[in-house]
Length: 157
Image (tube, rainbow, N blue to C red; front, side):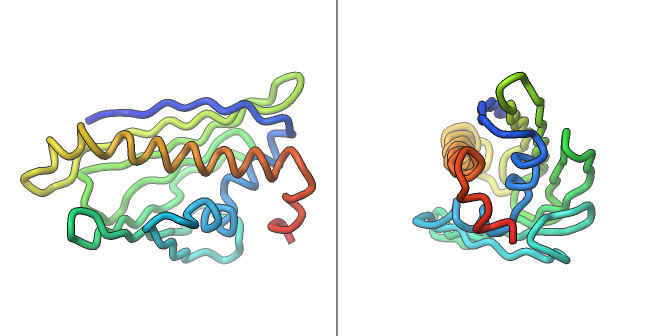
């Protein structure tokens, strides 16, 4: 098992950062230019408890899929998504939002176990951590850009 801990400062209220972080339109935009495709099974563009999202991408010659369910939500402080189906042994992503004097700290805590296949341990250590860190950094930068400008209005309806 390995983990990722990222902290991103955003000059915006926690509620806005929280809502942008669970916005499926923002998530899809963060994946543009990458090989991943996002499918959401949600009642609105804002993910809520029990909603699921599926990420699919081709890696190492194989199409890989991961379905995540929102398992916890304490608005606007935290929400958690966990793998319910996929190649990893386990995956848990905690999104924490801490309001500070001049903005919000977005804290990502990700815990995962390597893929189930035989090469999984080696691939997990070499590839997976960097892969997910890069994806999260891109997503957080996009959230920051939207939250710190009026762009958030284009995706919040």
